[in-house]
Amino acid sequence: MNNRDLNVFEIRTSDEFPSIAMNIFKHQYQNNKVYQRYCNLLGKSPKGVKEISDIPFLPIEFFKKDKVVSSINPVEAIFTSSGTTGAITSKHYVTDISVYEESYRQGFSYFYGDIQEYCVLALLPSYLERDGSSLIYMVNDLIERSNHSKSGFYLSNHKELSETLMKLDQSGQKVLLIGVSFALLDLVENYAFNLENTIVMETGGMKGRRKEVTRNELHYILQKGFGVTEIHSEYGMTELLSQGYSKGQGIFETPPWMKVMARDTENPLQLLNSTTTGGLNIIDLANYNSCSFIATQDLGKILPNNCFEVIGRFDNSDIRGCNLMAL
Image 1 (cartoon, rainbow, N blue to C red):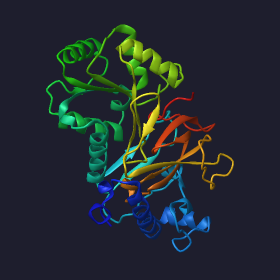
Image 2 (image 1 turned 90 degrees about the vertical axis):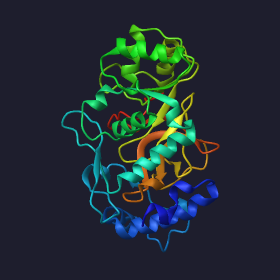
Image 3 (image 1 turned 90 degrees about the horizontal axis):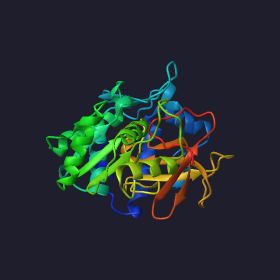
Image 4 (image 1 turned 180 degrees about the horizontal axis):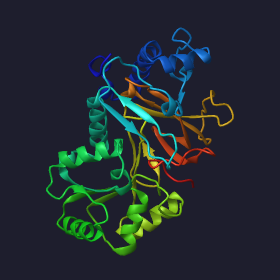
């Protein structure tokens, strides 16, 4: 099974999604031993699964202890989650890195247009300090594809970053400033901006560097510091090959090959049909070589028009860098 057979990234309407999702479920049940074992424990098999709501969602914790793959091809990359010292981290074994590249390239284009129109400035120090970050892989590729001489990563050189950012913005150049929350806060504590042509995008997470704040507090501080009306956000994780994006107010949208659902917090096998807060289940069709049906530890609400909001996390869950803080 490959992308050409599935046409995952050619999905344009919600009507096309279910049949492809069902085909991927059958493929993963047959070829993913970890997922098949989990489905069997629930008494679920392709014979009894008639629609998307019947498909079992694999708890994300399985990526910490098992090799979750649906392909016999060699592993080309292993993405690992961040975590505290000694903590068990998730591992996503990617057998076709080109699928990840196509997913984030088309996903960015779907929401923001041609990457070559942007200069990409990345403030992701905690991610650069470790190996195996899928976020760094994505941003590095976006930097290269932007083909702008000033695109690049910044660590503690905030003076250089602030000068570059202000010059680019004042020149009318479209800029994407993408950063981890604590680093963006560090920047605006020392420099003031009044940006007109820049998208400020936070990837969440204080990473133990600063006191946790609510999303509303974070965005308020960043809006004032950067002089912008909205703060954008990226929703992604090690176990996914696709991302959701928010252009403000913490309301996320997904590309056509990704869908977010909510499950009952008391009965994890029961999906919710309202905007009640629940655990977030994600269908990422780009994950067809691993597992496309994942039950995350995030809490949120499903909103109209394929949108969702992240409220927080289940108690006792690991703090994850790519997820938003609790409201």
